[in-house]
Amino acid sequence: MLALRERYDEFRQRVAAAVAETPDALWDLRTLGRLDTAGALTLWQGWGRKPPRRLLWLPEHVTLFSQFMQPTAFPKRKRSLGPGLELASLKTLAFARHGIDIVALVGRLLLDFVQMLRHPSLIGWREISANVYRTGAQALPITALVGFLVGLTLSYLISRQLKAYGADIFVINILGLAVLRELGPLLAAIIVAGRSGSAMTAQIGVMRVTQELDALSVMGISHTVRLVAPKVIALSISLPLVAVWTSALMLLGGMAAARAQLGLDPTQFLHTLPSVVEPVNLWLGWAKSILFGGLIALLACHFGLRVKPNTESLGQSVTQSVVTAITLVIVVDAVFAVLFSTVGV
Image 1 (cartoon, rainbow, N blue to C red):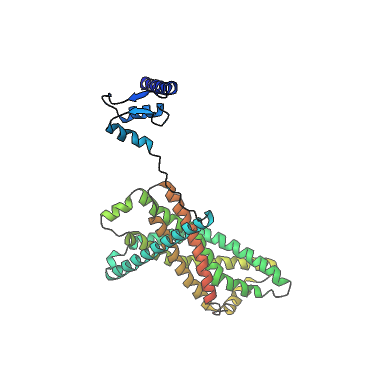
Image 2 (cartoon, one colour):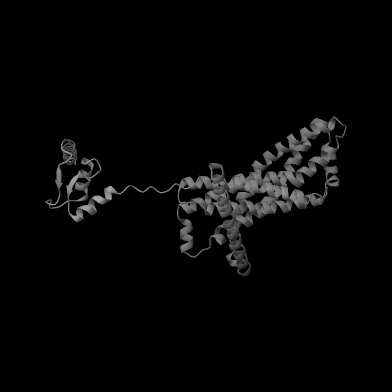
């Protein structure tokens, strides 16, 4: 190959030298037995990428050299909308695609729920119980720790403000309403979204990478029946229980801070709490927790099913799942706060 390269360069240089020395020389290609594309390109480069003044050639040579004579057609550059507007457009399209896919997933899930009600044997009780244990029982330690510390901090700050006005007893009203109605379910949902939601997305994503989802499809097993439905049902059951547990630990931490800061007796705290916080707030917190659980599981499964068969896509989907779930949980909680602003307060 090196020898051929050297001969090619030598021949091209000789052609270029001949053109430079005798520009009016006659180049007669009619006597050539055979001329291929490589030879034509060598002559063309030696001629300085233009035909010599005096040139005799055959019709097939014209076709051969014409591919070098035609200018390269560059595609027209598309008019840009600007980096900011273009990025916003891409994000909007991606959001719309996610919305369409989620609606389609919900539709399939509802149809599968109808089938499971007609044929209870399709219900994966073992998968549901396993997911309840993983998303509920195993989440109790971390939710207890975080709930207690948040309740302690919140009660400490509230107590300092109320103590300045001599309204120490109202710490029970504020803490009880905030925890049972808003903070307990919201904090539990955020922790579960980061802990269990990411695990669900990773589990389904790994099944995509290892082609287990393709195997289920080949066997005629529905992904929603086998994977999505048990997770949605399990998290809708376990999250309200975790929310009650988290709220109880937040109240315990708040009660400890009120005792240390205000000298408020725990017995008085527990006796006063049911009379100042209406039970409807507890039911409202439960209802939100059920919705939060279904939403987190649905988003986790959605992003898990969208994983492509590579590890980079798996990591991106897990991140998107957690961020989207936490964001939508906060949005839904804000909607509940506005719609039920006159209930139980």
